[in-house]
Length: 167
Image (cartoon, rainbow, N blue to C red; front, side, top):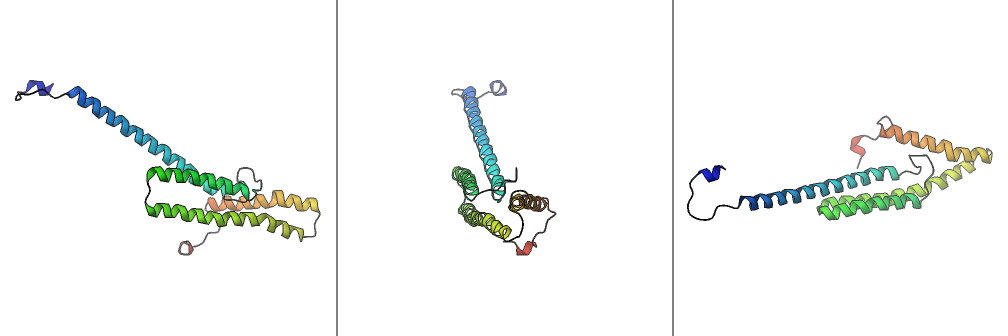
C-alpha cells in the first residue's frame, strides 16, 4: 500500500501478485529440496550406523552367529544406500575416495568374519570336553563374551589404542 500512496512516473504498476506467486513457488521448491536433502542425510546416517552394526561375527541384537554371506550382503546394501546418496549429492572426489576406502576395508572385514567361526570350531575341537558342552560354548558363551567386549568398547570402557596408533 505504501507504493500506491507515493507518486511515480508513467508506466504500468509492478505486478505484485505475480512477483509474490513466483517468490512463493521458489520458496516451496527450496523447501522441497531441503526436505529431500534431509531425507537423504537421514538415510545415509542410518546406513553408516548400520555398517557398524553389521560388521560383527555375531548379531548384536540376539547373539546369533553370522555366516560369511550374511554380513557381506548387509554391508553391500548399506553401501548401496551410501552410494545413492553420494551420487545425488555430487560429493567431492575426496569424499568418494573415503567411501571407496571404507568399502575396501569391509572386504577384509568380511574375510575376517568368515575365518572366525572355523577357527573357533578348530580350537574348541582341540579341547577334551563333551560335544554338547563344546556346542554350548560355541553358541552361547563365546557370543556373549564377544558382545560384552563390543559393548564395553562402544561404551568407552574397553581397551583402546592410543590415538597416535590409529589410522
